[in-house]
Length: 80
Image (tube, rainbow, N blue to C red; front, side):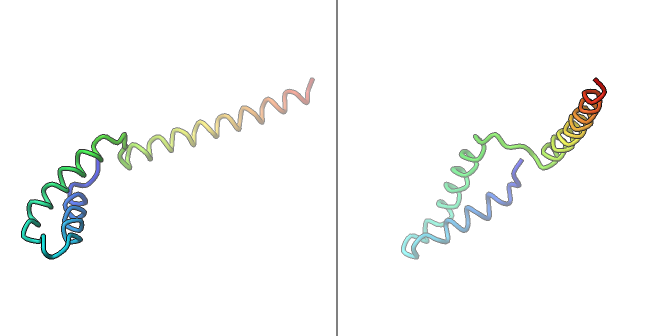
């Protein structure tokens, strides 16, 4: 899950980028930007860092097993 503080900071940066003549609407703009960001980013199929690390370790173990089996097969093929 993405840190909600990141959404707040990004919404404020977007609102601050608005021309000064529109600044009186800044709070409203921040809320609208925040809602838009949460909606758009919420639709993405993202995983947490922890989930990513777990899958990386599973992949690494699987890769090591495949390499060991390939080596074993190569050795068996030389015997025949």
